[in-house]
Image (cartoon, rainbow, N blue to C red; front, side, top):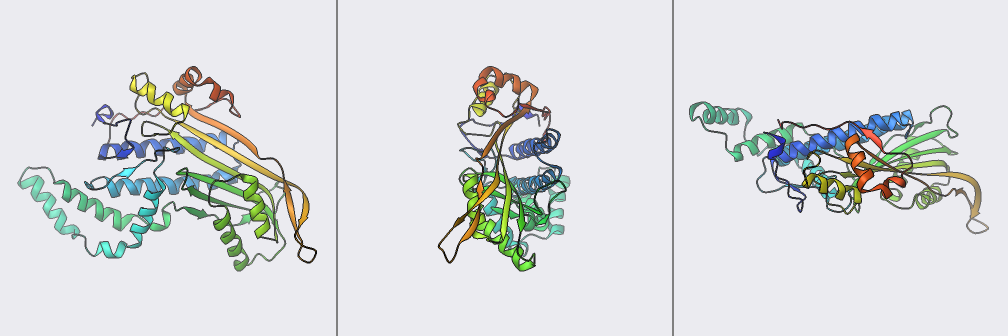
Amino acid sequence: MSVNHIVTPLDSAVLDSKEQYVFYHKMVDFALKELIVRVQQKNLCTQQEVFFFKQYADLLLYSIEAMRIKYMYDDEDNMKVDLTDSGFPNYLELRYLYNDLSLRDNYINKLTDVSVLQDQFLDQLLRKKEPVRSDKLFQAASIVYYTSVEQQYIFNRFVQGKIIDAPEGIEAKFMTSWSFYDVAHNRPFICFMYFDYNGKTTKKEKELIYDVLKTTADREMSLDTMAYTIDRRLPDLIPKHIKRVDLGPFHNIFAKDEHVITHAILDSIAKKEIPIESYALSLKIDEVFSGDTFEEGSFFSKQVLQRWSDVVHQKYILAPHRIIQLLYNKAPETLNKLAKPPIELADLKIDKLD
C-alpha cells in the first residue's frame, strides 16, 4: 500500500489501522536511531552516556513494536498517541502492555493451536480462494504477541541502570543511569548521576540507592530539587553531577501538542508543502553540578549536603534539512533560543508499508 493512502485525521491521535501502526513505528524507529547518532556526533552526551541512551531507546522501540503486534488486528481497541506534549504513546499504553504480559500464561492456554490456525489459513486461501478473516488474523497476532514479547524488555515507568565505575577523567568515582516515562508529559527522560560514596558498595547498599532513585527521581521536576532530595535521602552518597535528557516532543503527523514546531509541520503537511512522513525532534538537556557544602539539621543530627549550581538548560531541535528551512521561516524565534543551531537529521522516506 502506498503511504499516500493513509488516512490520519489531524483531530485524532488514535492509531486505528495496520498501516498506521507500521507507519508510526517506522517513524519512531528511524528518528530515535538518527538521534542516537547525532547525540554522539555533536558531543551532547559522553560515549558511556550514549551507550546507556541507546539501551533505553531500544526498550522504547521494543515496546512500540509490541504495541503494533498487539493492536494491529484488534477491531475493538486501538493504541493512542499522547494528546498533550509528546508525540509518543500515552503512558497508560505501556502500563497496559506490562500488566497484560503478566497474565501471559493465562492467555496462552486459551489461544488456538498454531497447527489448527495454519490449516484454517490454508483452507481459506487455497481452497476457498478468499482472504483470511480479520478475527483469524487477530488470533495469529495474539499468538505472536504472547509467545514472543518479553515483559522484561517493556519500557516501564521507571527503568534503573547499574552502578558502574565512572569513566576516566570524571571527577567522581561512580556513575549510574535511570530512565522514567513521565506520566504528566507522556514522554521518556534519561538521567545520569556521577557521585562518590563513603559507604560500602554491597548489594544491599546498591539496592538502597536504587530504591531512593525510584521514589525520588521518577518524574519531571526542577533538577536542583531532584539533586537535593537524592543528596538528603542518601547521607553516604555525594552527588557531583546530575544530567537529565528530556526526549521530546516528537513532532510528527500523529502529534497533537500545542508546540509551535508541531503546528508548523502539521500546517505544511496539510498544505502538501512537505511529505506526510516529515518530522522533527525536540531535546532538552538539564545539568547541575555540586560546589561547596553546607550543614542541615539539629545540633545532634547534622548532615552535610551539597550546594548546587544553577540549573544549566540546553534546548535542541533535530530535523531533516527541509524541515529546518521550514522552521526558520515559520518559527525563527523558537530556533533563536536553542543552545546550538538546529541539528540536521536524515530524511525519512516511506514509499510502501509492508
